[in-house]
Image (tube, rainbow over all chains, first blue to last red):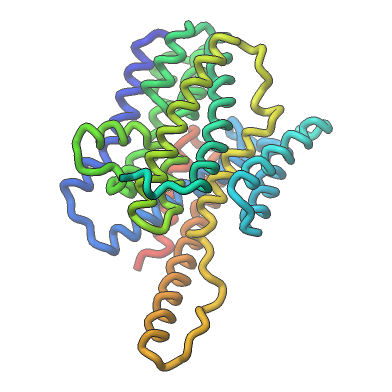
Length: 102
Length: 246
């Protein structure tokens, strides 16, 4: 890949990042809209969690990854520290893959 | 002044996610070089784009024989979610225009999620900058090391790191989706108790709305993933807001 498409991707990505702060500087949003915006971030992030957990390249990701994320979810639910959640999820997935589960 | 709101737990949590991102960055570096990018182009891309998913996507499209235009479009579709993110976290970027421009570049899923998980505006700001900055350094150092070392480093999949990221995001989202189970133990009838009970009810109602939206978002994203280009299902998940609009 040459530099030009990379620069276009970088510029476009920065424009997406910049649009939000610029818009919210100009428009005064009500508390209700602010609440909806927070919900929209929750929607995007949970959708990201779901697709990153269960899918890869438009198909099912295999069992090892969702099993690890599920383990992490249980640890988070039991209010264990964030580090334990992240390491636990990776550990379960790594162990499953080591034992032949994809 | 920001540092006053950073505690050791936050530093430790951020360090964990930055370390994981560094290893994934190393695999991006190795894959990029293996598919024909020079070390400095792979590094420049990581510094300038700083959005891992879209970087893997763009390099993958080109390596698979796709055109650079297709690679850019696929990457941009994946990154369009930063627009609504920016509307939500605009307040953490501060007042000075140069600082705002730098902070804007540090907007990634994890820094947004870390910020949203904080209880006060000061901590939101501290978490956003700490996480965004640590990820920027971790990711770019990882990419450079991976690009130089090539595929000699282990694969992030073998280490289960593809599970670490969704699990981490989920852990950050969980507090917004769950409310304190019981109302606080207060004497009924007192003004103080009435206010606390009302606040607890508000918190429970907000968490219930968040659960509806999150549930709808998951269904929309998963149902459309097999038929739509990567990135679009996550954007479509915004339609789940309709569940709480009245």
